[in-house]
Image (cartoon, rainbow, N blue to C red):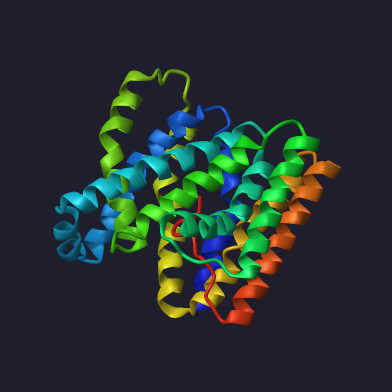
Length: 288
């Protein structure tokens, strides 16, 4: 059952670009503002239904936790905006590359900020991933800022969340709630004319789209070994790669393909090193 929960979560994250593509007529910033508001509401209902406010509120009252969660809120908000922007501007392939790179970037961030020592295999994997970025920069159409920004924002988000003892649902609820005032003001000030009732309905589903895979992810995390979750985290970017290239028909030239191949090679080295040393892979908290 745990594997089914994990596979369901990452499959939903893999196909989430299809939902955002239906909102192509709406500004990515407006979509993010709606996602913040509806996510806070939806996850608040879930927490109330599960009667989990008791352990959540004391943790949220600690100034240190609030500062860290505010930093996490800014980072996850930026990550959501970049991802939705990638879908609306037909750059989902770059987003997919960014999420493939993310676990390897997290390893590098752990070395820099947490003073974690890297094994030889990890150094090799991070170096190959860096080569993938250099390849796209020199042989493609410039630096892949979108892929690197997505990987960077989510990597630093994971780094911040390591400092707070809170589960994914509670953490994202607090982070969304911290962003609600700014999002609500933005929605009141931004023009909303020309938005159909159907579009409003789709925007209101953003909370469910955010909460359901997160709940599945949390259920899987409680039931599965970290090594299994480590493998499952590549399902999402793989499906995004297929959605971009097969359904959205984004051009996949030789330069992009070679960068993806380098990235897949880096992941293979990383997984092999984890298996040989019997260490769990770095896990992302809440992709997309």
